[in-house]
Length: 91
Image (cartoon, rainbow, N blue to C red):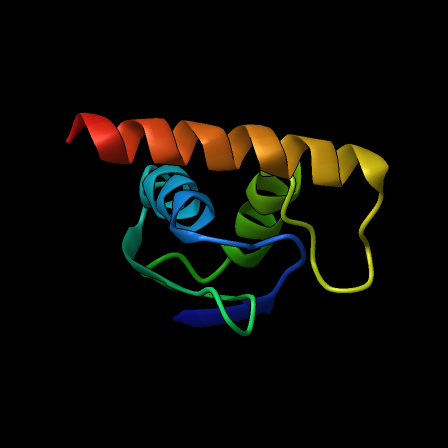
């Protein structure tokens, strides 16, 4: 099953790295792609019921679905982005 989710607050490779790392840990996830320019996350999963789990995890990280953005989500996304950048520099 492939899920294509339009989200808010993706700004750079740090954001993309955090999203890929976090969503890859969800059981059944096979592939995670992040389109930074269009703020689209595409997840391939063997779990037919993974959509809600993916959307919830993205929101927890500060990347809610389009139209659901707020100040708290923006703040969370900055933290997730920073973590992604730090992890990339350590690799």
